[in-house]
Image (tube, rainbow, N blue to C red):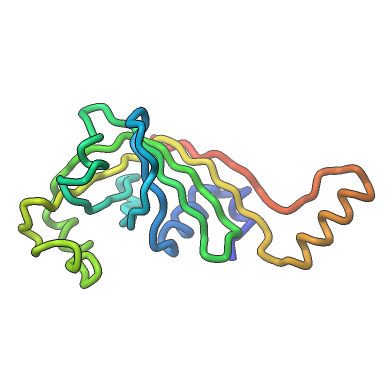
Length: 165
């Protein structure tokens, strides 16, 4: 369950917490004309980056240029946390990071860590918009009913924007 209070007081902390729990999101390169596509991400909070592994032969990789900007969107399993992150997307090799990211699921897509089609992408985060809401259907129904009777907006969540240095 997304922490609404933390989303208000420390949105960056709740963002990283939720990113660690999420298995994948949708990644897209700005201006490419392509649809976003599902990608598994790997968090590097200390560097303010998300890492992705893909193939050089994909349309996604072919759309990445020297000054590419991208968006990555995540929705939590309980659908009580949503985030849209943006930043610069570059191909970047880091063997120690690859070793950390490598697992049987990743291995299924490649012919080993030295696969010539394997490429690492890093998304250096610039900003993120987050929304944390209640996952309680009873609380949601109460807020909708209250808003209808009082002509006020329902209080079902928190929206915040996080800026990265």
